[in-house]
Amino acid sequence: MTSKKQIAILSIAKELFWKHGFKRVSIEEICTKANVSKMTFYRFYPNKLELAKAVFDKVIDESIADFKKLMNENIPAAEKMKRMLTMKMEGTNDISKEFLMDFYNNPELEVSAYIQQRSKMVWVEIIDDFRKGQQDGWLRKDFKPEIILIMSQKITELLLDENVLKLYASPQELVMEIANFFTYGIVPHE
Image (cartoon, rainbow, N blue to C red):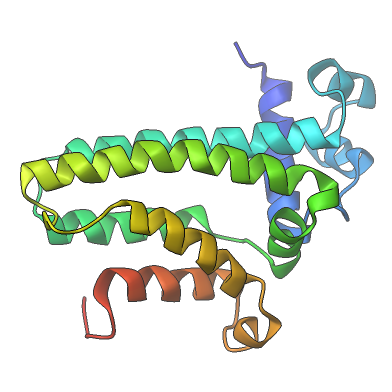
């Protein structure tokens, strides 16, 4: 069972990592904002990297649970897609450029490798859910779900491109542009 102090550490770490990236945030800052001692921090996490992994795991686990619940709802395909985009938007709230650069563009931090490894595992589940969507008839039968995994890896390159980032007010706006484009193309939608 997770204690209130551990929950506070995870919550504050996510907030600070999303806002400032991984490198800039210190254990001291996390402890101060979470109102815990360093000794308490080290009781739960041996270092900041393990904390970052725990934060990422918590976010992914919650997102997958929400996604699976949505996939099992008996609602029209358009509504499922709309809700998927809403989930994506909510999941990317407050992500900063620093976060993107640290977590996706700094192999020496070891966070990037962990995110890539965990993301591959998640994509296997998502692809299976999309195959079920094909069987249930709400996704095209001729659609190859694996293309989403391949495209998501290429999209990460866009998220790190300074010229692309300059076009948008925030990284979240760019993420949502990509998600909307992927879902709807360039046609108007509600």
